[in-house]
Amino acid sequence: MLVIVSLFAGIGLGVAFHSAVPFSWAPYLPMAVMAALDSVFGGLRARLEGTFDDRVFVISFLSNAVLAALLVWAGIRLGVQDIAIAVVVVFGVRIFQNLAAIRRILFHA
Amino acid sequence: MKTQPETGAPDSPRRARPRGQIAIALTLALLGFLLATQLRAQQGLTQRLGLERESDLGQILTTLTDRSDQLQSEIVDLRVKLAQASGTQAQQHALIDDARQQLQALQILLGLVPVRGPGVVMVFADPQGTIGPDVLLDAVQELRDAGAEAIEISSVRVVASTSFTGSPRAILVNGQPVRAPYQVTAIGPASTLAEAMRIPGGVVDSLAANSGASVRITEEGSVSILHVAALPEFVHARPTARR
Image (cartoon, rainbow over all chains, first blue to last red; front, side):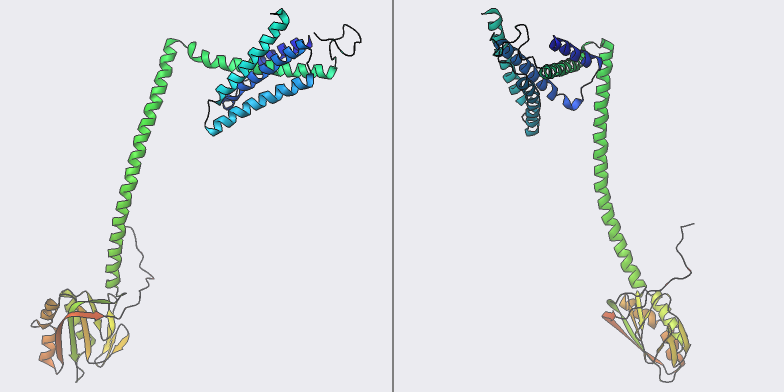
């Protein structure tokens, strides 16, 4: 319950603060969001499987987001801006896998 | 769902650690914040152009076109400046060459450098002591009139400020005593100088008519004037703007 409430509180904060993204963050924030979403679905799946650990969840959430942003940053520095595509693909596949696992657990199908 | 190892109260949430709950809550709040921010940013970007009215879009296009034109003209301006700078360099070279020539002319005129060239050498023999400073001055003026560019009298360089004072047998050229026979060296058009010296009624002619003084004139293809004058120091005269 607290979890749902805090999620919406965060969304509310983001909307309320009108926080314009600094232009220099533009390439990194989407990657961080993708990584965070991946962590959240992974955490949900782990919870449903009963292997959820809050420390693992929190640390993986933060480190995934930071690492994804760093990877994109390194890609831009190295002149391979397309590395963002690799990050998107990796996290997209993982989100799909997590969602599939959740679906199996919830619907036994 | 797996059963909890520590089966306390059956309705307690798994791993009911308050601190863990708070951490998860904070993390999800962060996720919400990030999501909202990113969605807003993305929306702003796509909507900005999508929601503009046609006239506004036209204005945006005009602004961008103007900016492009502005930058184009800036490029042209900079090209022109570049060309001007290159042209200026050539002009500067010409100026430097001019200045160098001027410096050389002034150095010769002021007698600051040794010079060499065609000219005449005259020797005024004066056994009876009849030649005064006025004779030498007259000779110098006649030489200059005939186009002499550099003159030397018995190892004293004659320049614009040179004075001729004293009396026969004790002539001072610019304060320096000179003794007979006086040797006058002049650089210039040799034959013209020699002819000017021999002109009837001139210095040489009158000298020969009056007294026992004699003058020997030799035209030389190349004579050297090695003595130099000191650079004059101007105390009172100051350059001023024309008019």
